[in-house]
Image (cartoon, rainbow, N blue to C red):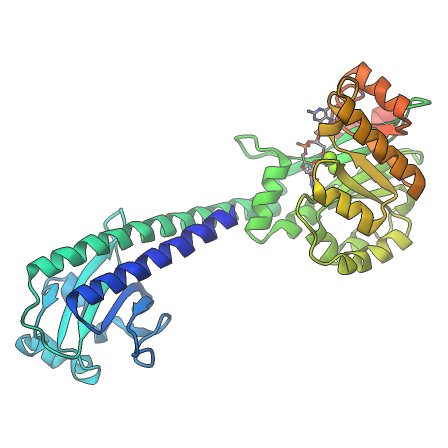
Length: 399
Ligand code: C2E
Ligand code: MG
Ligand code: MG
């Protein structure tokens, strides 16, 4: 989500930058900029003024009452001023003499709802009698392009703010609840625990990974993951002692350092922490350090979605988990697809040699189950064995 946003913003800025340069050169003026009105200030967003960086640069601002903008918006000054000496308002304003401004051309930038956003502006210290309405027309074309880029950017920022507000509501209002999917040993077949999977209340339904992705993109991912995990862990005391709970956490949540506190006071030998991350981890040493006290307290470590991509294998090599969860992409059709069976078998062998256990996820057919059993997979979960269920149902099932 955010990558897209950043790309739009960067692309937008460079387009505006190019537009400013073209117009400035076309008009033969020294300074071109796009400004944004903000809290009574004119803030320069993009500036094209080679050699005059000390005078004006992006991020600088001036009070709106000191500059021409408000007069131009109100029609008291024209958009094209070939000679500020001929305009009494310009002459009465200190900025005209300070900068100085001899000629000035500007087009107001409006958002699609018509509200003024800022200015697309060119100026020169010298009067320029050759500036004419056709120059202004050219400038208007470029200003329209800039206005379009800005409208897209503003809409994205508003959408992002809305998403953040919704996420805040979800976190603060606890608009989610855990489900528990049974995990069984395959032979003998027995219920041994549950994976906690979150369901979010807001409509339309969005899968949990979409919510977590959005939350991470908005900067509240760790907060959401911890809030959800706290809710999920509440079931542990209600389950019989032979049942564990497996909770999901992304590396940022683990690195955040809150987990030891969340797990404190719980029977940690009945807890499994699943590392859910499809992207490469930048610093495995830091992740190992953050995991060390958790694992020392008895929590077992699982790598989720093994076989789903390069990262999961890297996580396995770097973190040496107690459990490797076979991704459902490998499990689906493991009974009929030789290549999948070969890869699942290789992971089983790897697990055996490194003292890890394999849990297969997403088992949907008896034939998949049988194939996994033949490969020596020790545990499994999937719709065939039980769908994610509410806590009361899980407690009842566990007996
Ligand atoms: P995951 O941890 O790999 O969870 C397994 C997903 O497979 C779950 O989807 C589960 O409902 C689904 N599933 C289980 N058995 C079957 C099956 O037989 N067939 C099919 N087609 N699907 C099956 P879900 O609940 O939509 O979760 C998706 C992902 O969202 C999870 O993948 C996990 O990465 C993330 N997630 C879910 N709940 C939480 C949570 O509480 N915390 C965090 N951090 N992540 C979560
Ligand atoms: Mg999982
Ligand atoms: Mg998984």
